[in-house]
Length: 153
Image (tube, rainbow, N blue to C red; front, side):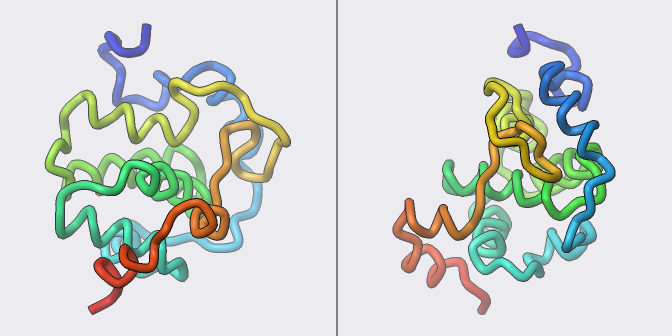
């Protein structure tokens, strides 16, 4: 059971299917790649992602649904999945109230398939890891007030 693993903070703790699909797509081209500093400063092209990062910085947490989007976009905008995990861990440990807590890693690794199953269709970068987009999230959540609260100053 992954909840009681000593390696909960390691890439190798992802389910076999998730590691395999991410590794099959490791060389997929990324149309946008951001640095750790750009992620940390909420300096991406995506206003919703930036708002989630600003909430993490200001409040030490991210809205639950948006936390999943936050992590999945880091995967999409990182050179490889191992780099994405490193960025998520660094940002979480730097800004989250529960940073460094083993339970916090469940949210991070959940973005990459922990506690999930393989999803189709297979997509670039994600393979069969569940995909999320900001456009679809905007349709599912009422985010106007959220964007006002956590928009650029």
